[in-house]
Length: 303
Image (tube, rainbow, N blue to C red; front, side, top):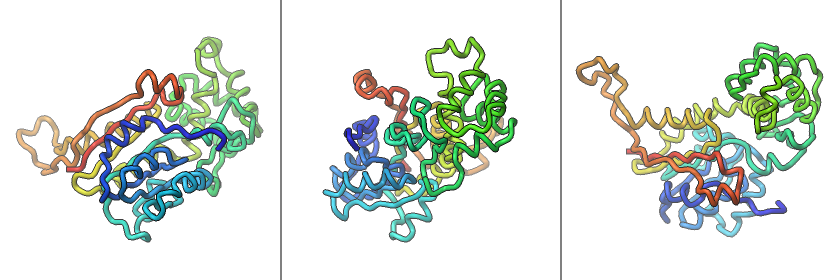
């Protein structure tokens, strides 16, 4: 990398994990290693897991000075049970998940994540998987495109944009997709401050990488792997991710799932988490690192 990687909410995230010298910590979205480096500074063992093999190589170089205290695994954090088993790790003292697309993925045109940089339609976080953005955009039926634009992009003009994408097929590059979306966007939508294609690119990227499904599976897996007193920290960048994190943590902290009409608890489910709080970047961090502006950190401790 030509410029240093700046992790989001580093002080708050590490503070929420409260790392110890005798602890074992999993950074399930290690990326370029900014958060993992901050955790490793406190001692203990750090496992860096990421589905992006190119990012993991940069992470290895950045954390080489910590020697065998840091280990590296290639894969999706939702598969942590399968990935941790061969290295003999059963329980963890902390798990960090920094969700969404990374700066490296956005800034490298050949990865095809950005509507501002012309490149082949790719958007794969794990380049070994077969599904690409080109397949989603060119082969998925109209109704399926409408669904992902609504569900993953929260795009109010989903039917109009899906029709425009289908009419413009075949689309080979990010610029062609961005142009098709802009041309299909109603005039009132084009007057919005953000780029017309922003929500569409988010929706296609989430669909390609199965991001929300991974989060739905990965959060319970992380909670199951935590020791009593272990902590989970989740950084999200849009409301879809944050709603899932908020719901899963709140349900685990609530315990009882009986209807309010029940006079007494019949399910016997006890709380398994204690919520620790919610943080957002300071004004200074948002100004110095604009990509951090939408970030939300939630943390909880296993009871």
